[in-house]
Image (cartoon, rainbow, N blue to C red; front, top):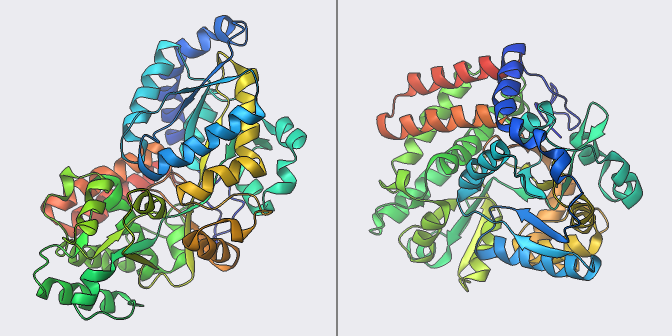
Length: 436
């Protein structure tokens, strides 16, 4: 698990947070945990329950299809256990995380919950809310099935707390092929200048907002891709561990480039979720959307076939990764059933059932590319060869507190377009969460 990747972009990073940030995180989560921890003796395995409440934000589209595949495999692997869907809809899990916090405060944790592998789990670990499952990794053979780099990333102070179901790529641009063809665009741009030129061509054909985008986290995703282009993968990774200063002139350039891109986006961006922006592309009202590769499965599930994709211009062979994972909460009502769920999540059959429909690729190294659709085959090849960098928007690079600060700063920028103010806000957030 990467809390903040090590200097130089290594994959086996460890926590580098300030004492003030750590104390603040523990204090906040302790309030949420008080009820849950206090009731663990009552709920922890003593009820004889056979229900396994699985708390996710996978409520529709390709995400729901992936969950359904995993549930089917769970039914085969875990006879006598019953899946209970605890899904809460909301882009990138914002609504689900709010509900989860309330559940923990009330002392009624789900049997397992979804979280992004990486710094997003740091608050739960610091507060002692999730169980160490290292011994289960050994029993299930996961240390052999997952690549060593991923095992290193998941390990915190010698312990592992989550089972990743997949690997996603964040820095992908999705296109409406007809819109681009009508604009005379025949090849993918390889740099930002070329991308802006293509946006102009689409706009000249009467498309008011060539680049579709939604609110907060979707804007952070786009901004991160611009940062990767302007800083390169190593300096981008350094933003999250203190090796790169947020006041760097290249960050200023990236903010200005991001500002330029926003001029080609829909003016109602702050009111839309990612699926609303996706619909603009599907309806031919936009030519492009920057979104994680779960979009492939979602477009397929919605029977939209006239799409293509490319890595964000200037990102080159950089793979910005994130992973969905599941944990065993302390105080879970049915820990035995939860462990069976986690074993299924990490199994070859479970990962195949899940990833072939969700649009992600398996975390396991023994998967057969031929079992997967075209996009996943390309992503699996890139995962093995590309430079890997984490995502703050999806928890592999930064904590939830830092993520919230970044989203807030970008929300203000969406309205005011104040470059110095955004850079100052981002630098201030970094000073609170990363050691200089």
